Image (cartoon, rainbow, N blue to C red):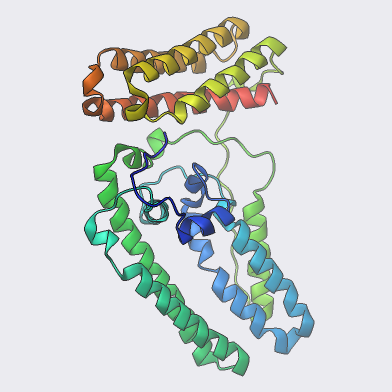
Length: 347
């Protein structure tokens, strides 16, 4: 569901422009909220420093780990899958960054809007980079380590403030609270047919850093085994009509997901849900016995949502917003399970 915009400037924040550069838009933020993504990103600066330092040992070959470190920095935010749970410090820090990046469209509490912490943390990071650069140029180990520690400490301080921001905002806005989920409500992840690219690249960087620094370290993290699939998941490609109906349902769900309930009103919600209901009924008819459990769960979630909306007063839509958000989250969860099956059967 889209975040309602507030009146004021529409100029994009610097943080949102940087996030867009790394591909962080919409639900892609959830992948960056994976703790692996957050903590391995802290390895980028030491890897870059080790690569530059190694020029005295391996000459121009130092460009190889340097380039790989830069590539890892660029792909890291989207390298790992969405986590099984976002109820942890690292995931909340990423969600806080997402809220902060959208501060030009979302009204923040005064204590955060007027806070100087982000600017001070950034200034400390700039100072740390300067000290680190001096250490790398002069081969001053103390300066290089000091600069790295300054940068990393300032970043941790900034992330800790982002956690506080998210904790405050999720209590004010139900759509932010919906970003948090535990293992029992985590959306299903598609099983991997081959080793994770993220783990392979990370292992390569660790080996290069060990060679550059003249020491060795082991890391044998592996991707979690994929959840077993049901017999229904191994079906052959679905009929052309079922796939066409599945595509129509995808489009209907995309429109429902972008709907802003206060702006659409009761009539708009009912129209969108009726459209989704019609597309789902068409898929149920063309699919036959395929995806029966997932379609039944989706049918129940949509039906509950329709009942909720039908019982709302036209002028009291805002009062029912928490229930609307809860029902929409249930529809999204059912749709995620159904969509994973459709993706396999209708490539």
